Amino acid sequence: MSEGQWWFCLKHMRVEPDQGCPNKDRMGPYTSEQEAAGALQRAADRNKAWDEAENDDD
Image 1 (spheres, rainbow, N blue to C red):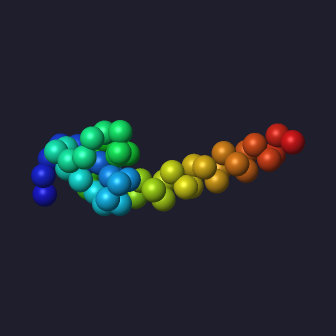
Image 2: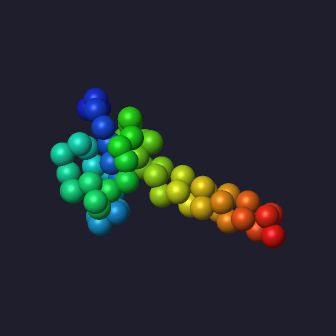
């Protein structure tokens, strides 16, 4: 599709190209539309890993 940067809009819960909502409402940039689509899952996975690592320190 289009080259450039892709973002995941937290306001509209969808992937957007470079021209979209303000960056304060978005996660990214990502190099592909597919990478941007996985932004929320990647964040959830990282949060879980950090929580588990924090619990291991106890």
